Length: 206
Image (cartoon, rainbow, N blue to C red; front, top):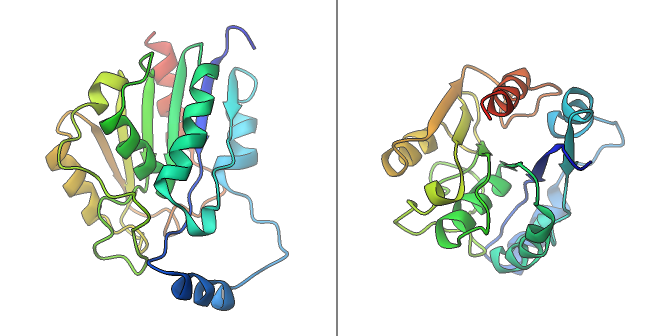
């Protein structure tokens, strides 16, 4: 995998203000044994796996995530990002990347960073955004960590309302922001061709 561009994908998660809320979530969460295809899994492998090395770390306790715990694990992977690499964060993984990259300097610039349906502050959502994932006011260091920055949202997303896009736009004026008409809510889609096209274009421009 020496010459392959690396894709490092940080999955989503949940945060809760206290243990009672977390346990209540577990009690009321619907479960299913049906396999649901997701863009971040088999589809991404099928479309990009031959020419890219896809890395998917398992972040600690995604059902009750804490930023400091995710940060510890993320830092362990940084030495493995030796080639050209792209960072993709989905949902909570998106705000994790925004926070980490706005507060820490990577040893090498990413080719691109994608934040897919990343919350900005949790406002307007029916989910709590706690656990240390809150962003600081200055996000400009992100530009020192990547050549390209993409923020992707959907108009029919109720978990991360599209109003989050404008909040990021005010802070990150040079970011590419795309707002799609509909991605089955919180990007619960089996395919994501727009992302594939963007990633391939990133590599072509090298």
